[in-house]
Amino acid sequence: MAFIPHQLLPGAAGLIGYASAKILAQQTATQFAAVRGANVGVGGWSCCSAVAVVPSALVPAIPGQPFGVMFGNSRMLGGGLAHGAAGGHAERAVLGAVNHHGQTLHNFGGAGGGHQYVMYVDLQPCVPCVGWLAAASPATAPFTGANAANALHVYWHWVLNPPNPTHPDHGPAGMAAFNSLGPGAQAADIATW
Image (cartoon, rainbow, N blue to C red; front, top):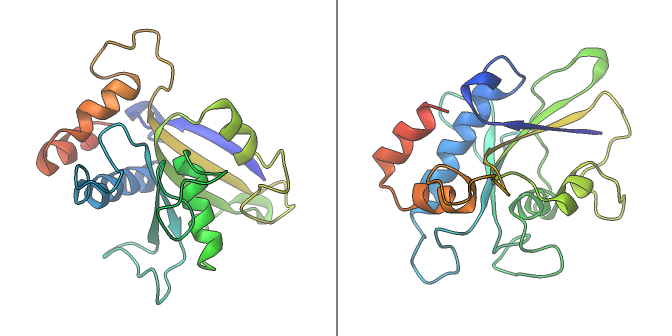
């Protein structure tokens, strides 16, 4: 399976899953706004993620969409607040939760019989996660499917190691500033991505 990273910005509008990635970003902001600062380990500097899944009894479809959403956070893993060996990485947490709960990634279609899956993560994946997402290590790959036409499109908004880390719209500091906004301001900001 191919791992295809995309920065969630207007220039990506023509790419597979762009519109759905914006929906996932909005769902992520809404989901985690409810617990940020509630002393459960999810603060403004916590990286969050979401992935589109086939709707089920556990994960219903988002109203008006053909997919449901599962969430991950850099402080969570699997089904609970466990910060184990694969913890500390939001993309690993969300795919671990999909696996743990027996859910299936939503297929956005593809040529040649391939499947196109979509994930949103706040921060650009780090180097170890890039290898993990590309299934460089089969033992840690959270999904199966040897079909080379399958692809996981991972959309992220903030650059992990920006050239100007003090700029309010860049890097982890930009993510933390965004997470301090109210829900209306977050929604308005996501609409510009």
